[in-house]
Length: 291
Image 1: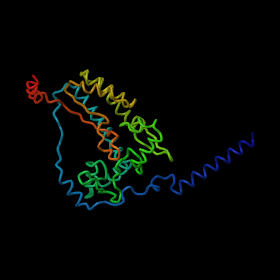
Image 2: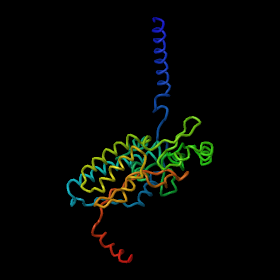
Image 3: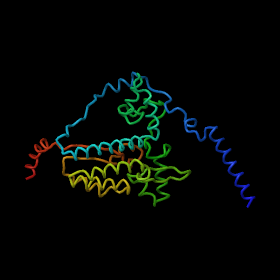
Image 4: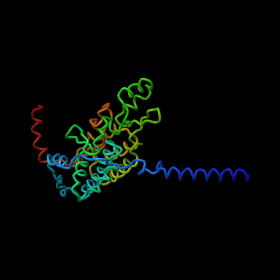
């Protein structure tokens, strides 16, 4: 018994020394290991020129005509949309959140243009200029962004599927990311990859569903919240088609344009819209041509 205690004490002491060694050498100190996130930048005037090509538009519709409960629904949907916004930021690059924190230091200085343009472009690559980097100029945008390992090629992906045909469904799913584990590739569902954010968004959707008087919107919000746990979006897509109220919502992973490597993976997006009943009524003239 005494011998076992001595061995355990020695083991704990050894682990303590190992931990201190790793910490001091920077292996466990993320900042030392990673280094500065912003290494260099394009000339400020070049970024200013790109920003000046754009015209800011304030989107502030008047929804005060809606009942109080529906106004609160919109409040929850906008909060949930900000979470979806952050998921897309992560989908573009694993470094985006860290880089955004660093760029916030520029707010209120002449270099704020880098922060502003980063927010517009959802990353350090200029979407108006063939994704040319304007921050960290030697780091090109990976064609598969953060959906895949940065070194993954189409040939390796297809070779893996050929060797592991049982993986094809998960690997080609729009709702998974591909991870490299040592020498193996693995599909991770969105529900796991973005678990914390999706659960927060789901809670907000369910709160909105309890508040709304529109049964079609409530059905969609509840089924979409469930999809964030199951990774199965079919029922919520069906419920979305049935929306028939004053609030229209697009919320979840849809378009695959960001995946320029294979075109499989869906990007998260959100639009909270109000139906313009007067203008919609004018479109009813189209119905006369169907007869």
